[in-house]
Length: 303
Length: 279
Image 1 (cartoon, each protein chain N blue to C red):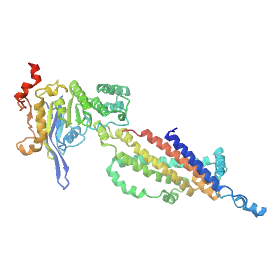
Image 2 (image 1 turned 30 degrees about the horizontal axis):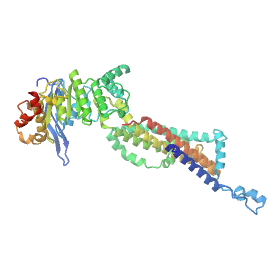
Image 3 (image 1 turned 120 degrees about the vertical axis):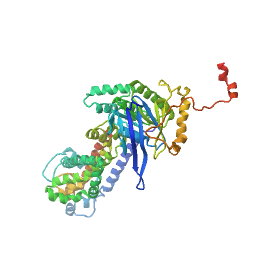
Image 4 (image 1 turned 90 degrees about the vertical axis):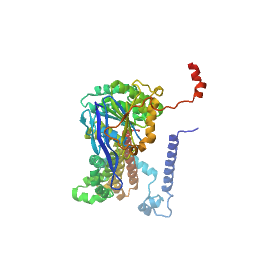
């Protein structure tokens, strides 16, 4: 990791506990990402994922440590870091165009109306909402609302896109199409993105690096999983890739068992040097019985 | 044959109105000439005694008088005899002015209270004590300090309409959804622009609801205030006609107070609908 575009350096978050003490959600968290990378954080609820994202966004402050983006320590929110909220957070009294234009005119204060409108329109077209510019959020479906949220975040051409479970409130079909859109846009524009998700397949499809966090309180970044799947992977045939199940099983195993026991099992864990894992074919796979192969119609056809 | 709900409701309303007028008419009609009365004595006694006429005017008397008022709403025959239109205009003018001052004070102050937990807590005891005071209790103090009855009435309107607006504005501003504020924060929107582009539109329905409650209270209070300060206005008119024992005029004034109050409420209701957004 030579190019540290985003570098989270030893941040901690503590809350005053019920009985006078303090509750540490996580501490001594180190994490870095290169420019143009797509990072996903996976972990159970309460491990502080959202807090990490909010600290990155500048909406929250770490109790200790610092976050450096593009060589500068961040201080508060910035137009360089756009957030796509889980609940889309559109302003309901503004139209689709109005919501995107609000972001555009916040970034470029001196632009005239026509220029703001044209710029906003470009991003509305990009997320496939052409023709719905003058609708209000209440007239849109959940997926369309989140598209507006994406258009709003992209329209300010941020250095980083931060996404807090952006598709968790959507139905599976809509989620799939939006994942495609986000992947396409991120690949086309070389966008650096940081996303929180609960969906393992979403992480496998979108992320270059998957950050696994143990359970809170006292959560740590246990492992960085590098995605072994090719860049040009498609959502439809993702599961046909030979490395897919190794990767998926690795993450699921972590979430099911290791996320609970990790801090107790691994005593020499160095938060500054988190191991990077790249699941491949060496993972054990289930072998079908010989009899099943003999009677399998697939085998017959293959011959 | 089925009518729409609206039409059926209208029919029931008309029937109820007709029934009310009918009962009123029957209850106040003459019971026929009283017997055994010398013409001179009858002349002295008036219709109530001689024709058995009720002291309460019937709907026809009120209707005739109302028509008279409506034909000449703006005549001015001196301090005690002005048209109904002039009296209402005085009252609406006082309410409007007091209410306007209340808006100018309550909305910025409410914004401040809603946005700053410190100010909110610091001002809370004062608001809690001042709010339940009957606006008319301020009247002597206002008369003593301001030394002008008309301005005192305006002050009373101000003091009664300021609280609902202040509290609703503070509540509306304080309960703006956190995510909308966060949107503005991530877009580096300054405090002033944030107040006008996010907080104001988000809190507008709550603020307008407070304003609607306020105009209702202001209109309730102006009648009582004008009875005290005298001179002009619909409240004074009611009291003056009571002193004249013109129950017909009192009834007409009551009707007018109701209609104007309804109109004021409807205007604010329309504004509230304009700023309300569906989520």
